Image (cartoon, rainbow, N blue to C red; front, side, top):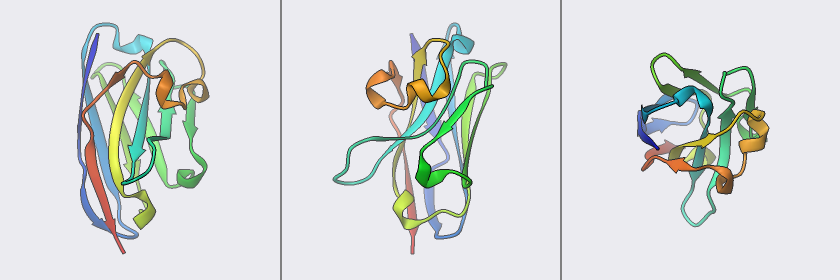
Length: 127
């Protein structure tokens, strides 16, 4: 079992940046793929970025490529999402998620494939 707690959300102007963090508690953190997903009002939850168990493989949804970076620290049991050039369309609740396994990051791009979820942190980008 893994418990995930997100932090770092907030209100930012378009063009600004934010760094989200997710702290995990539980065993065998390095055996989990991790991901950031988001859900805008009235929309389904969508994948933003995922990273495999070792950090050697990452996946980004097209709309955030070049602007968001996901990275993990297996020694500290954390995963972070650094976001720059934020756009109003990036507004939503951002969730940290984990799935046990050793596949490539792209194999964890569906919310239905994740096993554990945090409660989310709100990101609001104003125009």
